Image (cartoon, rainbow, N blue to C red; front, side, top):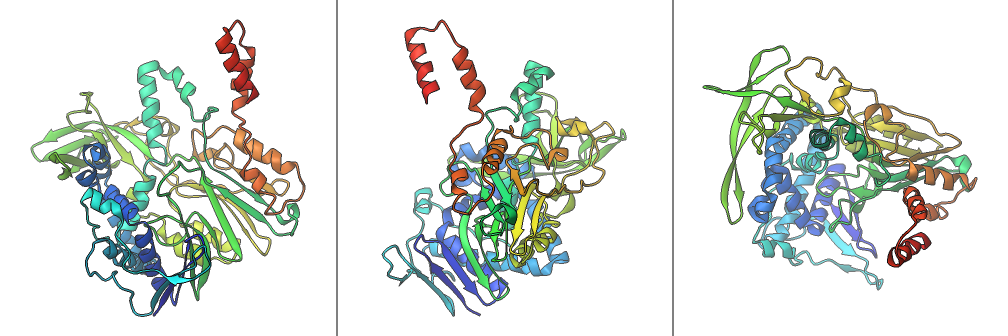
Length: 524
């Protein structure tokens, strides 16, 4: 077996190998070389051990990661993956093996990643056009020395834990806590004032044009993920090639393959957040007994809850113990038998799909790489779990796809708004929603986190101004080329500014300085 890494003029790695497993190993190795500190940080976040080197400021996250059982859920999901999809499990193992090889470069020792393996070659094409080989003994990432930290070892389940940690706050439960807070402080009528549908909301964009709307007769698909300015970013450009597939796209460092944005030569796909609600919070009534902790269920029966204690090491401050409790609903993420941290007699448990199903959707990743048509992408996404996304895809044969991918539970409407009482019946999960799908209207589809395809699955969505603006721009021309679409990507019109400008225009009786400021804002 052999693997080659070629870097283009922008430093983007192009990987070629003889098999998917060897390619995954090469992807893990090159990711560890390029993103070692990011990988180590994400591993610690997923395990709830980041306070050990980041200090007290990271303690609150570590508590949440431990109490939400992120690492344990990842282990559980990987065990299930090995049982039902051993090919994907072996592929993930190969990626982890490559990560560990690459991280050895940053330990400063003669680990397995310090030298090229048999048949492994890495080269680059720098900006001056003169190719050269990368030094396999490049200096370790400087962050390790500054933090007095050596990279740890990845386990086969670590990529699943990284995926969970990346997306655990991506869905509904933080919004439910916020609504509960607003209700307690300002009353239920005030909740709408802080809704995500407000004009200040941002998010991601994407659009799809059928061949009848393009200059070439082939579909065009655009993905525009709006991320915070991050260093390093949550995505990594990569090219993965083996006899079974040849894919370019954006990988998530720490996770094999190309999940969210990819192009296999004959089919491409892109996503935005569907704004779906697939996590629930439950108010729990807990009590201590001589045998442990019990929770009151919806049938009026007290049942034994799982309980144990874990120790979190905090840099400069010794250790902190955290009690981990799990009821029939899910892990208790706040409070306990004695109440919340502020003394409120309450506890909150979190119910989220991978904890319930032992399935994180990794079974979709290899089929996505092998996809040649929209139908292939569609079948692959049937295995998707979270985060729940709106997906658009197109292939060179004219196939088009516009659907939601992911797992959203069926339950009472109240579950989607705020935490619900665990001891009352009617808040159980009773099944899974069928992911919605739709066609294209006038040869175009726009996704920008707005109400639309995923409306039945969510509570709050982004305001429609971004989607409306893109739709209006697309309607302004009957046929588009790929180059033309850059005008939409770089459009600077802010639709949400309209109401604010109207209010500024109506202001009268201002002093000279305020009038000057108003006029400058209106002119801008």
